[in-house]
Amino acid sequence: MVKPHLEIKPEDCSPIGLLILQHMEFHQLSFTQMADNLGISRAALRIACLKNGNPGARMVPKLAAVLELKELEVKALISENKLNQIYKNNADS
Image (cartoon, rainbow, N blue to C red):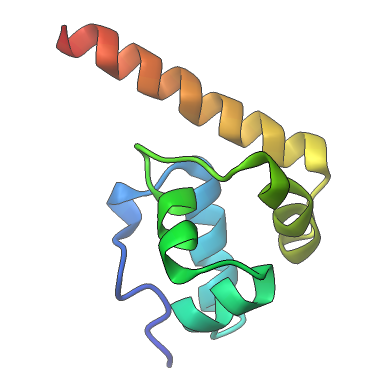
C-alpha cells in the first residue's frame, strides 16, 4: 500500500486534514498526487492539513469536490479548527 502521508502525521492534523489523509489513503494517493488533484503545491496542502494551519478560501470548492462534501461542511471544519487554534492560544497565554 502507498504511504500517502509520509510528510505529515495524523496527530498533527486538523479535522479537515484528517479527512484529506483518509481520502488519500482510501484512494492510495501520494501527497504529491493529492496536491496535484487540488491544483495546489505540496506546501499549501501541508498547511491545509495541519492543526496550526487552514486551507485558504479559494481551496474550499476544490476540497469539497475532491472530498465529496458540501462547501458548507468544509467551511464548518475549517471554522472548527480556527476556534481550536484560538482556544489553544488563549490557554497557552
